Image 1 (spheres, one colour):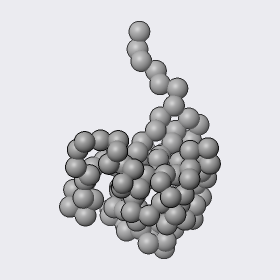
Image 2 (cartoon, rainbow, N blue to C red):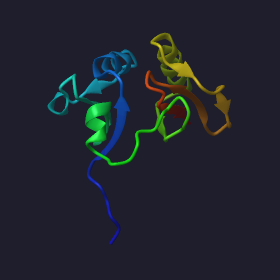
Image 3 (spheres, rainbow, N blue to C red):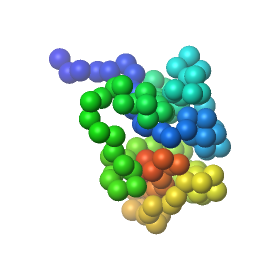
Image 4 (cartoon, rainbow, N blue to C red):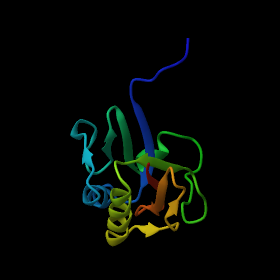
Length: 131
């Protein structure tokens, strides 16, 4: 029998939880306040049963014995999200840049899929796409 998770949580380390919350609120995301305290961690609702935990570095260090990745030097992962339209992709990436994020790719149109990417305030990479 295949493993099927009922919820997905991705944990990202951030310098300042409140600033990160303002950034992602500006992009249109909402937070699950049950898992948010604005100092230690915040829980972004990405979709049905999909969440990203923004944890301050001190708390993140308690989750692992490994060294935290320096996102100025290394790519840890890319979070890829599909949205409803190509216009929405452009809106999200442009808004991210206006809120202090950094555009990291040129828009790519593959015909069947369109995508564009940005880094958030802490250097985590996000790829936004649409069919």
